[in-house]
Length: 76
Image (cartoon, rainbow, N blue to C red; front, side, top):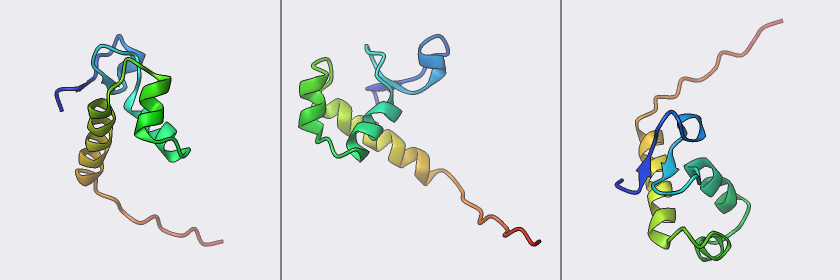
């Protein structure tokens, strides 16, 4: 997790890859759109495959620590 950081003055505090202004959210969006980690690194040469893995690991840990409660269906 050394590769991911968050500072209020950078990207409104969203988690980013250290030394960049590339957010974990943006990396996940690229992956969800179908880009491979290698393609992301080619498009953003400041990123490494380890950075992409760190973003995925960060999101995974965040979700593991999140409790989800089912929403109650509204009755009309």
